[in-house]
Length: 183
Image (cartoon, rainbow, N blue to C red; front, side):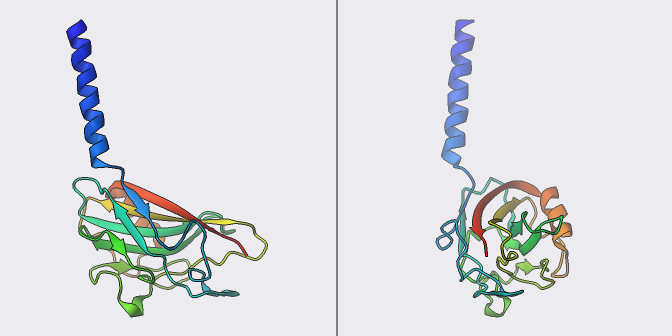
């Protein structure tokens, strides 16, 4: 019994060490600081920002990752269903960073294979924060998804709900960060 207990403890320590060595799937940004700035804010709907998507980088993707996707979602929007600000998918597995303003399709900063589909603004690419005046602080959840497929099989006309369905069906792991903004 004592040998069995010692063996079990050693096995658990090794498993814990291997999990720690792999690291935690993590999403970071060098230019959000937790708060959206005028650089990130939408230019329209009464907002006057630069509408630039934040720089993003992620580490420790799970084994078996074949592609990535990124979304930005505001659950506090007064719509009853939140607001999708950015949906980009089919990012190749060797992608681990997106530069600032990669959501601007004209600049072609995102990998050529990637797809940026429509948002709740009705357009493709990034649409920054623009909550109603006086509505309080909104949270903008940016999530990177590690996926078990190279391609979702969707195009730029796919709705955020449809993309979300495919993301969840192919999900290995996800990591998020939140930035906040109010007017």
